[in-house]
Image (cartoon, rainbow, N blue to C red; front, top):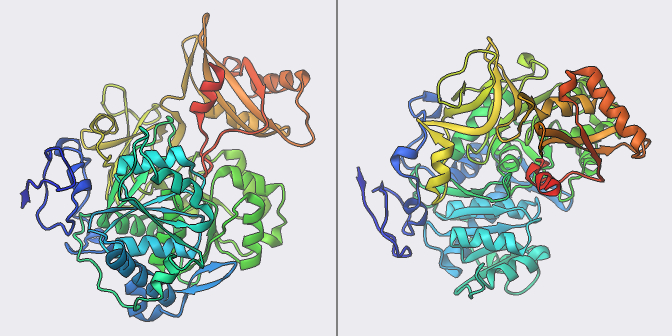
Length: 562
């Protein structure tokens, strides 16, 4: 049954409808759901993903573990100590009581979370969801202007923030983007010994809590895209979405066990980090090492120190670790996952040669919540991203929307147990979801066996003198040269050819940038692939612009080349 409901906090008329059985009194998210015709096709009849109508995903992830007898198992490992599942539950329950009793949280309210990867940040996320709120976790690297945008778009007036990173959050909550004051805004600090800190408020609460009787279709979290276009967009994910994501990739590709120790570099403010370091291990009953400093060097040190067995990071980090590791340091690793950007074949092969392990590549997105194309180690086809995992199906479509033939390059389309639901953004929703399929913005080809081979972002295909050139192909060749640490290739305007290829190169320590090296790299590319694909322009740079998860920001390189 569907009825039209108008939010008391929403001045405009609700355009769509929402489930009558929602537990949310604040209907901000429901009011801003895409219209029905713009929603993707969801798979709801698969028995593996059949969830009850009344569902609180935080309770399913955490309470179930303690009730099932795993309360004394280690959930999170931090340099300051261990958190068992029972300790995590009691902390989350106390925080949930603080939210309801001291912060007057109304179900459906959005709560901004800010801090580095830390067990208290996880406890806050779980508490918000247990209390019926919508968790909006932001990376601690975001600055004031970025936080203002998130708070404005999500109409957020309450934040739980690590005291060490309070400055930008306090500035952001003081005003809107237009400079006007943000009334009734409140920030509660944790990891603090202040008398009004979250810990002080928690100390007055019992460790039991009755979870919000949420609908499985209530929004549990609001995640913002990392901004490959420079303009982040809010994506909504329900309680059902969270559990479906936790039940797909881990069960059918990762195949971890409760005895595994997870570790990784992505911040929990990104869905890749939330999945790989919280949802996946908790659903499995495993442990996670949370590193506040997660450079390749710190990650390598953490793997060795804590005998981690499952690693989540980006291709850049694997490549950087290769230059520092000795095989005994990573002897404990049995699963390595790469996402955020495509995994170069050269990195896959070098890691396999150095460690004996195969990196599991995968593609996911903030819009889809988690990875939807990948392959377990025994089914990996080096160079390919993988196949559609259980719970999803994928295909390649042409620009006119028709299905492409095997081997033909086109746009990646996917649908499954999760899907894109932009917050109050019908224009972008209509671009991303077409005919029930999610169009991810990636260019792939699919072979006869259903493996998907990444070509480029659809806006990264370079057309030069009539040739379609995938920048990733040129990047892979450049990475094979011993002088290249990192690189990125884009198309720049050219009056004669329409576009020409421009490469940005970070050199290794033993190869200082010079004109001779530039020519050597250009000749190297011409010697490895068709000469028309070589970068006619090449610039040496100290570093490449990336998000906190390691995703390359090509739009910044385009701006640099204007």
